[in-house]
Length: 242
Length: 218
Image 1 (cartoon, rainbow over the protein chains, first blue to last red):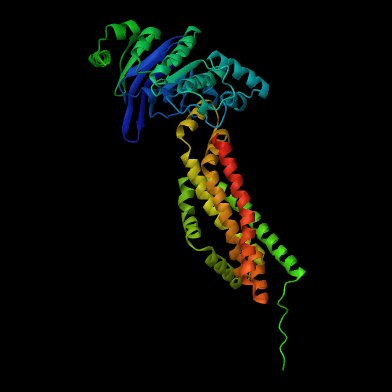
Image 2 (cartoon, rainbow over the protein chains, first blue to last red):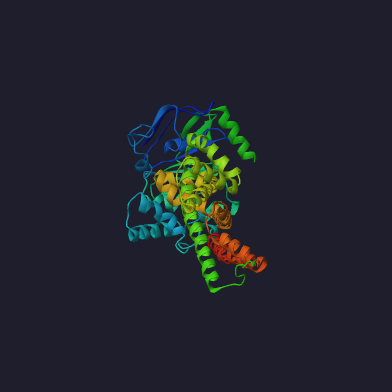
C-alpha cells in the first residue's frame, strides 16, 4: 500500500503540490486526472523518490520514501515507472535495455537476466524484437519495452506517467492493451493520464487533481459518473466536447 | 685561406636521424594524448558534477585554452629554468602538451555529459541503478557518441602541435627536419616529406574515427 500524507513539493518558490493525501491500495488501478500543471506527474516522481518533497510523507509498504536512511535504490525495485518518452536507452538493444538493471541492481547472472528479459519482452509482444536497437522500434514498441524493463525487476507497483501522450494515435492502443493485460494479472497501478475513456474502462478509482490539490477522489462511477466538484465537472465537460 | 663547407648531400645517417625524430613525435603525441585524455575525462567530469570545482578550475581552463601553445612552452621553460628546476626538454614538452590536452578534452567531456538527456538518467535511476552505475552504463556511452569526433579532432590537433616543442629544443621530427634543412638547403623536399609524415599519422586516425562514428550511429 502507498500512503501519501499532506505532501508539499516546491520547485524553487513555486509550490507544485499543496498538501496531497491519497492512498493506493494493493491490486487497484488508480488513475490521476487533471489539467496540465496540476501536479500529477510530479506526484508520481515523488512516490519513487526521484523528486524530494518539502513537507508530509510518502510511505510504500511501510517504508518512508524520503527518510534519510531509506535505501532508494532498493525501494525503486518495488516501484516500476514508465515515463512519457525517452525511456529506452538508445545505445542498448531491447534485450540489453532489460538485462542491464537485472544484472547491476538485481545481481542476476548473465544467463538468468537474458532468460528473464526474454520472458518479459515476449509478454509485452516484443519477442521478435529482442536484438533491435530502440531506433528500430516504433514509439509504441519503445513504450512496451519500457514496461517490460520495469516489470523485469518484479515490482509490486507500476507507475505510468502519461505513457501514451507522446505517441501517434494509432500506436496508443497497443500500449493501453499492455496496461490492461497487467491490470488483469492483478498488478497495482497508478496511471497519470489524459485518457478519460481508459480511466472509465480500466480504472478502479480516480483522483482528480487541481493546482496541486486532490479536489475529488472516488470510484470511477462516482468521479466520472457524477462528479461533485465543480472543477471536475468542467474538466470532464471540456473533454467530452473535444 | 680556404673554407671547407659541411657536406651538403644526404646520407643514410640522415634517414636514421629523421626516423628518430619521427619516433620522438609519435612518443610525445601518444604520451601527451594519453595523459591529457585521462586528465580531461576526470577534470571534465568534476566540472560537470560540481559547481565549486567548476568555479575554482575556470581560470586554469580559460588561461590554458587562450594562450598560444608556443608561448606556453617558452614561458614554462623560462619559469622552470629560473626556478632552477632542471627538466629535460622531453618532460617539459609532455607537461605543457598534456596540460593543454587535459583542458580542451575536459571541455568536450563536460559538454558531452551535459548533452545527455536527463530523461535517460532518470529512467536508469528509477530502475534502482546508482549514480556511478548510471554514469558508466548510460551517461558515459551516450556522451561518447556526442564527444568522440570532437575528441579525435583534439588528438589530431595535438599531434600537429607537437611540432611546436622544437622551440624549447626537443629534437622531434620537425626539429630534425629543420636541422637537415639548414645543412642541405633542401627545404622543399624535406618539408614536403615532413608534411606527408604528419598526414600519414593523422589520416588513419581520422578515417578510423569516421568508421567508429558510423558504427555508433547505426
